[in-house]
Image 1 (cartoon, rainbow, N blue to C red):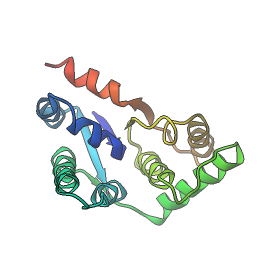
Image 2: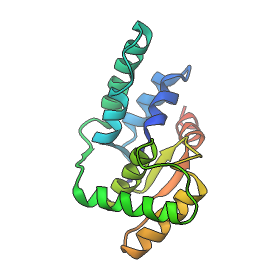
Image 3: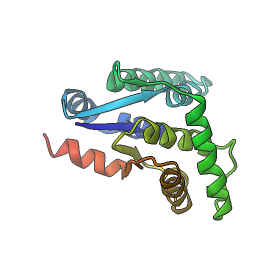
Length: 168
């Protein structure tokens, strides 16, 4: 069974697909593919500003999509995960990473730390600047090797679409 986690942006892209309902159903019905939830992801979705009716509605739709896809598969946050994410960040900065900790990179590194800590197989993301950036990938590999953790595979949004559209 593949145990996976989606970066926050995956939910935003997925909801815009013309066949989103079909893809979501295929994801939820696939017994060999389990998507895990993680509190920092849900918090990031919940933090979408409620400025307009459209943004409020989008926020609600994204939270509902997240809850349906992750179901009761939820990973707990811990100090160890935060520490691992900060180790990624320190190494990332030492090899030329440019983003600050208080940007979206904090949640990205927390997601990867969670996936590494719990031994998940895949992290899906559409973020090639931070989560899937060259320096970030080097940092995960370096720190996970040092900490004796298996790094998850990193796949893009298109890989997810191709997987579940091929089942239609």
